[in-house]
Each structure stands twice: as C-alpha cells, then as structure tokens.
Length: 126
Ligand code: 5GP
Image (cartoon, rainbow, N blue to C red):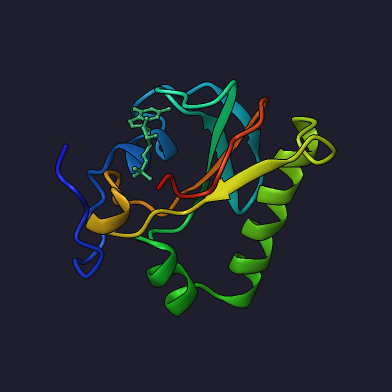
C-alpha cells in the first residue's frame, strides 16, 4: 500500500471509512459518539488497537486543524478509555499517530495505535 500524502483531501474510499460505514468488518472493542476502536489486522504487539474519529480527517494534522473542540475532547477521552479498559495503564502502553510518508502512514483516515502487553523497548529503533 502506498504511503499517505497528508496534504491531500480526505478520500472516503479509504479502508477505515469503509469500516465506519459498516462496509468492511472489524473486531470492535469500543464505540461512542466520537470514536470507534478495533483490533489492528496486523498486530505488532500482544495488544494492538486502532482508535479512529468518526469524522473525516486524514491525519492528526488535519484533525487538530479542522475538528471541533468537542470532537477532539471526545476522541482523546476515547483513546484514554480504551487503554484503561484494556488494562494497559499500570503496565504501560504506547500511543502512536503516524502522519505521512516519513512515518509510514498507509491509511488516510486519522488513527491512533494503542500498543501494549509486553515491554515495547525504545520509541524509535536506532
Ligand atoms: P498506519 O501505518 O497508517 O499508521 O497504520 C495503519 C494500520 O492499519 C496498520 O497497522 C495495519 O495493520 C492496519 N490495517 C490496515 N488495513 C486494516 C483493516 O482492513 N482492518 C484492520 N483492523 N486494520 C487494518
């Protein structure tokens, strides 16, 4: 899959848009007015969950530039809630938002990865 160009307009044919519309399945762990959370199809840790906003945003950049304060607050609370529900606060976890080619973003709908379940090592391998 090609890397996302974060300067392009939102494309509603991306995979996560299709999951939001129920056109593709997902293994849901949480949903509220602002966010949907589901297991990553290619987990890179024992627990690897994606949290996505319900609105059409390409990246964290796009989300923070265009979303309302209510959407941003609702989404951030959902990320925290999922990590808590998964028991990942006490042992620790890592939340990651990739933006654009240098970060390897491949899905053009803003998402936060929540990874945990084992020690994760350094944030960026040398
Ligand atoms: P990115 O590199 O864009 O930050 O990460 C996209 C993530 O989406 C990857 O970890 C990839 O495994 C996951 N992913 C891609 N397609 C699907 C899918 O159809 N369903 C689910 N659940 N995850 C997906």
